[in-house]
Figure 1: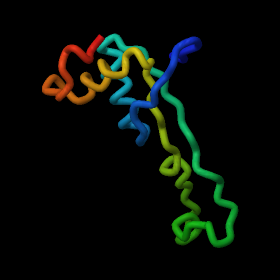
Figure 2: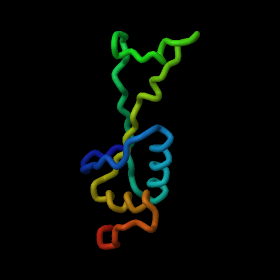
Figure 3: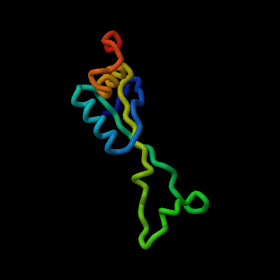
Figure 4: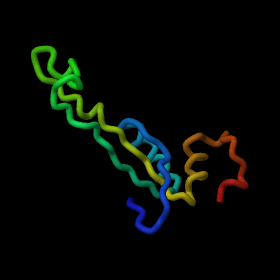
Length: 98
């Protein structure tokens, strides 16, 4: 869910499955999240072209591996979300959780 008038904090970056798992964990705990992706620049050839893109019999599209997913939470929920992701034995005390 997108936050319209709330300050946001990017809590985690990673792969699609990792971010989906963390997002489900936070949503189950009642914390609103927003996830979005950033793609790597398109490879057009030249020195930046990766050999794995064209080597072999068939073209293999590695675009899914080049995408980075981001997970955002509201700034007011940041410490609570960190505690949920780290588990119950988090080093943060209850005075930081609001």
